[in-house]
Amino acid sequence: EPILNIAHVKLSDLVGYETAKKKLVENTEAFVSGRKANNCLLYGDAGTGKSSSIKAIANEYYDRGLRIIEVYRHQFRDLNDVIAQIKNRNYKFIIYMDDLSFEEFEAFQPTRETYALFGYPLGHTMSPALHHALFAAASRDADYIAVTVPPELLADALALARQKLAGINLTIPHKKAVIPLLDAVDQSAADLSSVNTVAFRDGKAIGFNTDILGFAESLERDGVSLRGKKVLLLGYGGAAAVMGYHCLCEGAHLFITGRNPEKAQALCNHLTRVLPSAKCTVCTRRQIPKDTAVVLNATPLGMFPREDKTPLYFLPRKTVYVFDAIYNPPVTALMKLANPRRTKTRDGLFMLVMQDASAQTIWYNAQFSD
Ligand code: NAP
Image 1 (cartoon, rainbow, N blue to C red):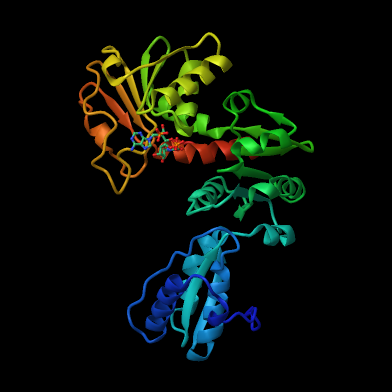
Image 2 (image 1 turned 180 degrees about the vertical axis):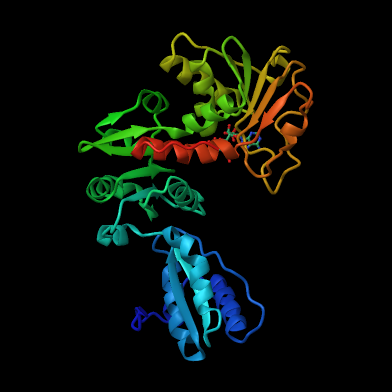
Protein backbone atom coordinates (compact mmCIF):
# COMPACT_ATOMS: atom_id res chain seq x y z
CA GLU A 1 0.00 0.00 0.00
CA PRO A 2 1.50 3.36 -0.92
CA ILE A 3 1.60 5.99 1.82
CA LEU A 4 0.49 9.25 0.28
CA ASN A 5 0.72 11.54 3.28
CA ILE A 6 3.92 11.67 5.18
CA ALA A 7 4.92 14.19 7.81
CA HIS A 8 5.24 17.63 6.25
CA VAL A 9 8.92 17.95 6.84
CA LYS A 10 10.89 20.12 4.45
CA LEU A 11 14.63 20.22 4.02
CA SER A 12 14.53 23.87 5.10
CA ASP A 13 12.98 22.76 8.45
CA LEU A 14 16.08 20.76 9.28
CA VAL A 15 18.72 22.97 10.82
CA GLY A 16 22.04 22.40 12.51
CA TYR A 17 23.74 19.90 10.26
CA GLU A 18 24.26 21.79 7.05
CA THR A 19 27.26 19.84 5.74
CA ALA A 20 25.54 16.47 6.02
CA LYS A 21 22.35 17.92 4.53
CA LYS A 22 24.28 19.44 1.58
CA LYS A 23 25.85 16.07 0.80
CA LEU A 24 22.50 14.32 1.00
CA VAL A 25 20.87 16.89 -1.32
CA GLU A 26 23.71 16.75 -3.87
CA ASN A 27 23.53 12.98 -3.89
CA THR A 28 19.75 12.96 -4.31
CA GLU A 29 19.98 15.58 -7.11
CA ALA A 30 22.47 13.35 -8.91
CA PHE A 31 20.22 10.33 -8.43
CA VAL A 32 17.00 11.91 -9.71
CA SER A 33 18.90 13.44 -12.67
CA GLY A 34 20.12 9.98 -13.67
CA ARG A 35 23.74 10.66 -12.74
CA LYS A 36 25.89 8.42 -10.55
CA ALA A 37 24.90 8.52 -6.90
CA ASN A 38 25.99 6.78 -3.73
CA ASN A 39 24.28 4.61 -1.17
CA CYS A 40 24.12 6.59 2.07
CA LEU A 41 24.52 5.64 5.70
CA LEU A 42 22.87 8.13 8.05
CA TYR A 43 24.12 7.64 11.55
CA GLY A 44 23.69 9.45 14.83
CA ASP A 45 21.78 9.11 18.08
CA ALA A 46 18.02 8.70 18.13
CA GLY A 47 16.21 11.98 17.50
CA THR A 48 18.98 13.67 15.52
CA GLY A 49 16.94 13.87 12.32
CA LYS A 50 17.89 10.79 10.31
CA SER A 51 14.38 9.66 9.40
CA SER A 52 13.17 13.28 9.18
CA SER A 53 15.80 13.82 6.49
CA ILE A 54 14.40 10.91 4.51
CA LYS A 55 10.86 12.30 4.81
CA ALA A 56 12.07 15.73 3.75
CA ILE A 57 13.84 14.27 0.72
CA ALA A 58 10.68 12.37 -0.23
CA ASN A 59 8.58 15.54 -0.02
CA GLU A 60 11.09 17.71 -1.85
CA TYR A 61 11.66 15.37 -4.80
CA TYR A 62 8.21 13.78 -5.08
CA ASP A 63 7.30 15.89 -8.11
CA ARG A 64 10.46 14.81 -9.87
CA GLY A 65 9.43 11.17 -9.59
CA LEU A 66 11.26 10.14 -6.43
CA ARG A 67 9.60 7.51 -4.26
CA ILE A 68 10.82 6.02 -0.99
CA ILE A 69 10.36 2.39 0.04
CA GLU A 70 10.91 1.66 3.71
CA VAL A 71 12.20 -1.79 4.54
CA TYR A 72 12.85 -2.90 8.09
CA ARG A 73 15.85 -5.07 8.75
CA HIS A 74 13.68 -8.08 9.43
CA GLN A 75 12.38 -7.71 5.87
CA PHE A 76 15.84 -8.17 4.38
CA ARG A 77 14.85 -11.44 2.87
CA ASP A 78 12.21 -9.67 0.75
CA LEU A 79 14.70 -7.21 -0.72
CA ASN A 80 15.27 -9.07 -3.98
CA ASP A 81 11.51 -9.37 -4.56
CA VAL A 82 11.08 -5.67 -3.90
CA ILE A 83 13.84 -4.77 -6.35
CA ALA A 84 12.41 -7.13 -8.98
CA GLN A 85 9.01 -5.43 -8.68
CA ILE A 86 10.24 -1.86 -9.01
CA LYS A 87 13.00 -2.38 -11.56
CA ASN A 88 11.04 -1.37 -14.62
CA ARG A 89 8.82 1.29 -13.09
CA ASN A 90 8.97 4.85 -14.30
CA TYR A 91 10.06 6.33 -10.99
CA LYS A 92 13.29 6.65 -9.08
CA PHE A 93 13.24 4.67 -5.87
CA ILE A 94 15.25 5.04 -2.72
CA ILE A 95 15.15 1.96 -0.51
CA TYR A 96 15.35 3.08 3.07
CA MET A 97 16.20 0.63 5.84
CA ASP A 98 15.70 1.37 9.49
CA ASP A 99 15.53 -0.22 12.91
CA LEU A 100 12.34 0.08 14.93
CA SER A 101 12.39 3.03 17.32
CA PHE A 102 11.14 2.37 20.85
CA GLU A 103 7.86 4.14 20.00
CA GLU A 104 7.36 1.96 16.93
CA PHE A 105 8.07 -1.09 19.07
CA GLU A 106 5.36 0.03 21.52
CA ALA A 107 2.86 0.07 18.65
CA PHE A 108 4.24 -3.09 17.04
CA GLN A 109 1.81 -6.02 16.95
CA PRO A 110 3.55 -9.24 16.00
CA THR A 111 1.68 -11.44 13.55
CA ARG A 112 3.88 -14.45 14.24
CA GLU A 113 6.55 -15.60 16.67
CA THR A 114 8.96 -12.67 16.96
CA TYR A 115 12.37 -12.17 18.54
CA ALA A 116 14.29 -8.91 18.87
CA LEU A 117 17.65 -7.32 19.43
CA PHE A 118 17.73 -4.38 21.86
CA GLY A 119 20.68 -2.02 21.67
CA TYR A 120 21.61 1.66 21.64
CA PRO A 121 22.83 2.67 19.17
CA LEU A 122 22.55 -0.40 16.99
CA GLY A 123 25.10 0.49 14.30
CA HIS A 124 25.16 -1.96 11.44
CA THR A 125 24.39 -5.23 13.19
CA MET A 126 24.40 -8.49 11.26
CA SER A 127 22.12 -10.19 13.79
CA PRO A 128 18.75 -9.84 11.98
CA ALA A 129 20.17 -11.28 8.75
CA LEU A 130 21.91 -14.10 10.64
CA HIS A 131 18.85 -14.99 12.70
CA HIS A 132 16.67 -15.07 9.60
CA ALA A 133 19.12 -17.42 7.93
CA LEU A 134 18.98 -19.64 11.03
CA PHE A 135 15.15 -19.59 11.12
CA ALA A 136 15.19 -20.67 7.48
CA ALA A 137 17.68 -23.47 8.24
CA ALA A 138 15.48 -24.66 11.13
CA SER A 139 12.25 -24.26 9.08
CA ARG A 140 10.92 -21.96 11.79
CA ASP A 141 8.26 -19.43 10.81
CA ALA A 142 9.61 -16.59 12.92
CA ASP A 143 10.68 -12.96 12.68
CA TYR A 144 13.59 -11.04 14.16
CA ILE A 145 13.58 -7.28 14.56
CA ALA A 146 16.17 -4.75 15.72
CA VAL A 147 14.89 -2.16 18.19
CA THR A 148 16.72 0.96 19.29
CA VAL A 149 16.19 1.04 23.06
CA PRO A 150 17.74 3.98 24.95
CA PRO A 151 19.12 2.96 28.39
CA GLU A 152 16.37 4.73 30.35
CA LEU A 153 13.68 2.75 28.49
CA LEU A 154 15.18 -0.72 28.95
CA ALA A 155 12.79 -1.70 31.76
CA ASP A 156 9.77 -0.59 29.70
CA ALA A 157 11.10 -2.42 26.64
CA LEU A 158 11.57 -5.61 28.64
CA ALA A 159 8.01 -5.35 30.02
CA LEU A 160 6.69 -5.02 26.45
CA ALA A 161 8.92 -7.88 25.31
CA ARG A 162 7.38 -10.17 27.94
CA GLN A 163 3.98 -9.56 26.29
CA LYS A 164 4.92 -9.46 22.61
CA LEU A 165 8.08 -11.41 21.99
CA ALA A 166 9.27 -14.98 22.20
CA GLY A 167 12.81 -14.00 23.22
CA ILE A 168 15.36 -11.20 22.99
CA ASN A 169 19.04 -10.49 22.45
CA LEU A 170 20.80 -7.59 24.11
CA THR A 171 23.83 -5.67 23.03
CA ILE A 172 25.69 -2.58 24.21
CA PRO A 173 24.80 -0.91 26.61
CA HIS A 174 22.19 -3.32 28.01
CA LYS A 175 24.10 -6.54 28.74
CA LYS A 176 24.74 -5.71 32.40
CA ALA A 177 21.85 -3.31 33.02
CA VAL A 178 19.26 -5.97 32.16
CA ILE A 179 20.35 -8.34 34.96
CA PRO A 180 18.37 -6.79 37.86
CA LEU A 181 15.27 -6.76 35.64
CA LEU A 182 15.29 -10.54 35.11
CA ASP A 183 13.73 -13.35 37.16
CA ALA A 184 16.76 -15.65 36.89
CA VAL A 185 20.23 -15.62 35.35
CA ASP A 186 22.30 -18.55 34.19
CA GLN A 187 25.47 -19.05 36.28
CA SER A 188 28.05 -18.12 33.63
CA ALA A 189 26.12 -15.00 32.58
CA ALA A 190 25.89 -14.01 36.27
CA ASP A 191 29.62 -14.61 36.77
CA LEU A 192 30.42 -12.40 33.79
CA SER A 193 27.68 -9.84 34.63
CA SER A 194 26.72 -10.05 30.99
CA VAL A 195 23.43 -11.27 29.51
CA ASN A 196 22.98 -11.21 25.75
CA THR A 197 20.00 -13.58 25.44
CA VAL A 198 16.71 -13.68 27.34
CA ALA A 199 14.23 -16.53 27.13
CA PHE A 200 10.66 -16.25 28.40
CA ARG A 201 9.65 -19.47 30.13
CA ASP A 202 6.45 -19.94 32.15
CA GLY A 203 6.10 -16.18 32.51
CA LYS A 204 9.68 -15.79 33.74
CA ALA A 205 12.50 -13.91 32.00
CA ILE A 206 15.75 -15.89 32.17
CA GLY A 207 19.14 -14.48 31.13
CA PHE A 208 21.96 -16.32 29.33
CA ASN A 209 25.28 -15.48 27.72
CA THR A 210 25.71 -17.17 24.36
CA ASP A 211 29.09 -15.50 23.61
CA ILE A 212 30.60 -18.20 25.81
CA LEU A 213 28.74 -20.92 23.93
CA GLY A 214 29.97 -19.56 20.59
CA PHE A 215 33.58 -19.64 21.80
CA ALA A 216 33.19 -23.08 23.40
CA GLU A 217 31.71 -24.48 20.18
CA SER A 218 34.70 -23.18 18.19
CA LEU A 219 37.17 -25.01 20.44
CA GLU A 220 35.07 -28.13 20.45
CA ARG A 221 34.83 -28.14 16.68
CA ASP A 222 38.63 -27.98 16.50
CA GLY A 223 39.05 -30.72 19.11
CA VAL A 224 41.00 -28.42 21.45
CA SER A 225 41.20 -29.58 25.05
CA LEU A 226 42.26 -27.00 27.60
CA ARG A 227 42.70 -28.95 30.84
CA GLY A 228 46.15 -28.32 32.31
CA LYS A 229 47.22 -26.24 29.25
CA LYS A 230 48.80 -22.80 29.35
CA VAL A 231 46.62 -20.35 27.48
CA LEU A 232 47.71 -16.83 26.52
CA LEU A 233 44.90 -14.28 26.35
CA LEU A 234 45.66 -11.06 24.44
CA GLY A 235 43.34 -8.30 25.69
CA TYR A 236 41.06 -7.83 28.68
CA GLY A 237 37.80 -6.37 27.27
CA GLY A 238 34.38 -7.95 26.77
CA ALA A 239 35.41 -10.77 24.44
CA ALA A 240 38.50 -11.49 26.57
CA ALA A 241 36.37 -11.90 29.70
CA VAL A 242 34.18 -14.47 27.97
CA MET A 243 37.08 -16.40 26.45
CA GLY A 244 39.16 -16.31 29.64
CA TYR A 245 36.20 -17.44 31.75
CA HIS A 246 35.58 -20.44 29.54
CA CYS A 247 39.27 -21.45 29.56
CA LEU A 248 39.36 -21.30 33.35
CA CYS A 249 36.14 -23.31 33.65
CA GLU A 250 37.83 -25.93 31.45
CA GLY A 251 40.86 -26.14 33.76
CA ALA A 252 43.45 -24.14 31.79
CA HIS A 253 46.13 -21.93 33.33
CA LEU A 254 45.36 -18.51 31.89
CA PHE A 255 47.98 -15.82 31.23
CA ILE A 256 46.55 -12.40 30.41
CA THR A 257 48.59 -9.74 28.67
CA GLY A 258 47.89 -6.36 27.07
CA ARG A 259 49.04 -2.78 26.91
CA ASN A 260 47.57 -1.84 30.28
CA PRO A 261 48.67 -4.23 33.08
CA GLU A 262 46.19 -2.74 35.55
CA LYS A 263 43.25 -3.54 33.32
CA ALA A 264 44.64 -7.03 32.74
CA GLN A 265 44.92 -7.45 36.52
CA ALA A 266 41.34 -6.23 36.99
CA LEU A 267 40.06 -8.96 34.65
CA CYS A 268 42.26 -11.55 36.36
CA ASN A 269 40.92 -10.46 39.78
CA HIS A 270 37.36 -10.67 38.57
CA LEU A 271 37.82 -14.14 37.10
CA THR A 272 39.48 -15.53 40.21
CA ARG A 273 36.79 -13.97 42.40
CA VAL A 274 34.02 -15.83 40.56
CA LEU A 275 36.13 -18.97 40.02
CA PRO A 276 38.19 -19.17 43.23
CA SER A 277 40.19 -22.27 42.31
CA ALA A 278 41.13 -20.93 38.86
CA LYS A 279 44.75 -20.38 37.85
CA CYS A 280 45.08 -16.92 36.32
CA THR A 281 48.23 -14.80 35.97
CA VAL A 282 48.95 -11.42 34.40
CA CYS A 283 52.15 -11.29 32.38
CA THR A 284 54.21 -8.91 30.30
CA ARG A 285 55.23 -9.92 26.79
CA ARG A 286 58.62 -11.03 28.07
CA GLN A 287 56.99 -13.25 30.67
CA ILE A 288 54.84 -15.16 28.19
CA PRO A 289 55.50 -18.84 29.04
CA LYS A 290 57.51 -20.66 26.38
CA ASP A 291 55.26 -23.70 26.76
CA THR A 292 52.09 -21.78 25.98
CA ALA A 293 49.82 -24.16 24.05
CA VAL A 294 46.95 -21.91 23.04
CA VAL A 295 46.96 -18.23 21.98
CA LEU A 296 43.73 -16.20 21.95
CA ASN A 297 43.36 -12.76 20.41
CA ALA A 298 40.62 -10.66 22.01
CA THR A 299 41.86 -7.29 20.72
CA PRO A 300 40.83 -5.63 17.45
CA LEU A 301 44.46 -5.65 16.24
CA GLY A 302 44.46 -7.11 12.73
CA MET A 303 40.83 -6.27 11.96
CA PHE A 304 39.84 -4.85 8.56
CA PRO A 305 40.90 -2.32 7.27
CA ARG A 306 44.16 -2.42 9.31
CA GLU A 307 44.90 -6.03 8.55
CA ASP A 308 48.66 -5.66 8.85
CA LYS A 309 48.42 -5.13 12.63
CA THR A 310 49.12 -7.98 14.99
CA PRO A 311 49.06 -8.22 18.78
CA LEU A 312 52.17 -10.51 18.74
CA TYR A 313 55.13 -10.70 16.36
CA PHE A 314 55.87 -14.37 16.95
CA LEU A 315 54.10 -17.24 18.64
CA PRO A 316 55.49 -19.21 21.59
CA ARG A 317 57.27 -22.22 20.11
CA LYS A 318 54.89 -24.85 21.44
CA THR A 319 51.68 -23.18 20.34
CA VAL A 320 49.27 -25.77 18.97
CA TYR A 321 46.21 -23.57 18.54
CA VAL A 322 45.55 -19.92 17.69
CA PHE A 323 42.08 -18.46 18.01
CA ASP A 324 41.40 -14.94 16.75
CA ALA A 325 38.04 -13.38 17.69
CA ILE A 326 38.30 -11.17 14.59
CA TYR A 327 36.16 -12.40 11.68
CA ASN A 328 37.23 -9.96 8.98
CA PRO A 329 39.67 -10.83 7.44
CA PRO A 330 39.21 -14.59 7.79
CA VAL A 331 42.96 -15.13 8.11
CA THR A 332 44.49 -12.49 10.37
CA ALA A 333 48.14 -11.47 10.65
CA LEU A 334 48.30 -13.36 13.97
CA MET A 335 46.96 -16.54 12.37
CA LYS A 336 49.57 -16.20 9.61
CA LEU A 337 52.31 -16.56 12.23
CA ALA A 338 51.24 -20.15 12.84
CA ASN A 339 53.20 -22.99 11.34
CA PRO A 340 50.51 -25.04 9.57
CA ARG A 341 52.29 -28.29 10.41
CA ARG A 342 51.92 -27.91 14.17
CA THR A 343 49.42 -25.15 14.83
CA LYS A 344 45.70 -25.09 14.05
CA THR A 345 44.01 -21.72 13.64
CA ARG A 346 40.47 -20.40 13.73
CA ASP A 347 38.98 -16.95 13.17
CA GLY A 348 35.92 -15.51 14.98
CA LEU A 349 33.21 -16.13 12.37
CA PHE A 350 32.08 -19.50 13.71
CA MET A 351 31.95 -18.03 17.24
CA LEU A 352 29.77 -15.22 15.95
CA VAL A 353 27.37 -17.51 14.11
CA MET A 354 27.21 -20.00 16.98
CA GLN A 355 26.28 -17.23 19.43
CA ASP A 356 23.13 -16.63 17.44
CA ALA A 357 22.56 -20.34 16.83
CA SER A 358 22.89 -20.98 20.58
CA ALA A 359 20.31 -18.26 21.27
CA GLN A 360 17.89 -20.12 19.01
CA THR A 361 18.68 -23.36 20.81
CA ILE A 362 17.83 -21.67 24.11
CA TRP A 363 14.63 -20.13 22.73
CA TYR A 364 13.05 -23.09 20.99
CA ASN A 365 15.55 -25.95 21.19
CA ALA A 366 16.76 -25.66 17.59
CA GLN A 367 19.75 -27.83 16.76
CA PHE A 368 22.20 -26.81 14.06
CA SER A 369 24.95 -28.86 12.55
CA ASP A 370 27.25 -27.33 9.88
P1 NAP B 1 36.59 -4.29 24.00
O1 NAP B 1 35.75 -4.69 25.14
O2 NAP B 1 36.62 -2.84 23.59
O3 NAP B 1 38.12 -4.76 24.29
C1 NAP B 1 39.13 -4.49 23.38
C2 NAP B 1 40.46 -5.01 23.94
O4 NAP B 1 41.47 -4.79 22.96
C3 NAP B 1 40.92 -4.29 25.19
O5 NAP B 1 41.70 -5.15 25.96
C4 NAP B 1 41.76 -3.17 24.59
O6 NAP B 1 42.72 -2.65 25.49
C5 NAP B 1 42.46 -3.90 23.48
N1 NAP B 1 42.91 -2.99 22.43
C6 NAP B 1 42.13 -2.18 21.68
N2 NAP B 1 42.91 -1.49 20.80
C7 NAP B 1 44.18 -1.89 21.05
C8 NAP B 1 45.45 -1.52 20.49
N3 NAP B 1 45.52 -0.62 19.50
N4 NAP B 1 46.56 -2.11 20.98
C9 NAP B 1 46.48 -3.01 21.98
N5 NAP B 1 45.32 -3.40 22.56
C10 NAP B 1 44.18 -2.84 22.09
O7 NAP B 1 36.19 -5.07 22.68
P2 NAP B 1 35.61 -6.56 22.56
O8 NAP B 1 34.14 -6.48 22.44
O9 NAP B 1 36.21 -7.38 23.62
O10 NAP B 1 36.15 -6.97 21.11
C11 NAP B 1 37.52 -7.30 20.90
C12 NAP B 1 37.66 -7.98 19.54
O11 NAP B 1 36.95 -9.20 19.54
C13 NAP B 1 37.12 -7.17 18.37
O12 NAP B 1 37.95 -7.38 17.26
C14 NAP B 1 35.76 -7.77 18.12
O13 NAP B 1 35.37 -7.65 16.76
C15 NAP B 1 36.03 -9.23 18.47
N6 NAP B 1 34.82 -9.91 18.91
C16 NAP B 1 34.47 -11.03 18.22
C17 NAP B 1 33.36 -11.75 18.61
C18 NAP B 1 33.00 -12.98 17.83
O14 NAP B 1 31.92 -13.51 18.04
N7 NAP B 1 33.83 -13.46 16.97
C19 NAP B 1 32.60 -11.34 19.72
C20 NAP B 1 33.00 -10.19 20.41
C21 NAP B 1 34.12 -9.48 19.99
P3 NAP B 1 42.54 -1.13 26.05
O15 NAP B 1 41.38 -1.18 27.00
O16 NAP B 1 43.83 -0.85 26.70
O17 NAP B 1 42.25 -0.28 24.83
